[in-house]
Every structure is written in C-alpha cells, then in structure tokens.
Length: 172
Image 1 (cartoon, rainbow, N blue to C red):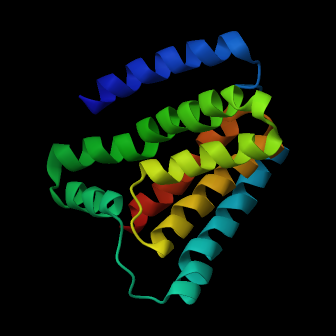
Image 2 (cartoon, rainbow, N blue to C red):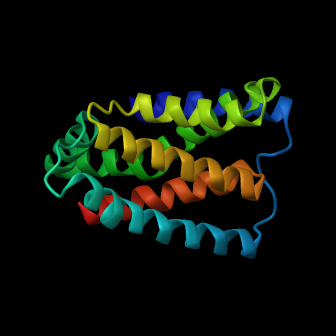
C-alpha cells in the first residue's frame, strides 16, 4: 500500500515542482556525484563516531528506527518490500516533500528559513524523542539540505538519501 501511495505522492509532488522550478533534474554531473560521496563519508563519521561520542554509546533508538528494525526482522516479502520502501520510495517522497516543495515554498521567507524549515520538519516527521535523536535527524536533514543547495538539483539529494538509507539498511 505504501508503494502505491508513494507513487501517487511522488507523481503529484513532482508535477507541482516541475511547474514551479527547473531545479529538479539535470544530466548526471560526476563532480556532483563526487560531492555526494564526500557527504556520505562525512555523514557516516558524524553518525557513527561524533554523535555517539557526544551522547554516549548506549542511547535509546527512535520509534522510527524501532519500527524499521521490526519490519526488517519479519523476513520474507514483508522485509523485502519494506527495504524497497526504505531505500527507494521514502527518499523520493521525502526529498520531493522537504527539499522540493517545502524548500520552494519557503523561498519568500529568506535563505535561512529556507534551510531551517525543511530540515526541522524532516527531523520532526521521523519522531525523535531525545536530544540525541533530534541531533541525528537534524544532522541528516541539514546534510541533505547542503547537498540540495550545493548541487542546486533535487536529484542529488534523492541520490544521497537513497545511498544513505541503503548503507543503513545493509548495516542492519
């Protein structure tokens, strides 16, 4: 069901963005792909070493992460579809929503709000309940926003998000 809903949201979100901006897709730029790789390394360092060093190693995981892990543990078709959702569908929907629609709609409010608002909404949607969880999701949202701003195209934040979720999925 989430795959169908994701397709519908992605379709209408993309159409909306296409009517407002040209900053969605471009021919693949290898320098921008290199930037994504650098950002992925930075993300892993932040998530695996720096944030745990600040908050300690034994922090509670978020409800979002608990739900993801329980779906992966079910095995079979459920786990496979959920992995597909996590690695492909969710990044597309989230990037169209946060770094696409919310980003574009925040333009009149200035660049600072345009950066902070989608980052905060992204974090809040993931349901953090502790300072560490807020830090993790705000960091992830901010890094996604940096990719979006530096590359100037939504496709690269989608790629970054997919690669990040793939690495997290393989790591589970």
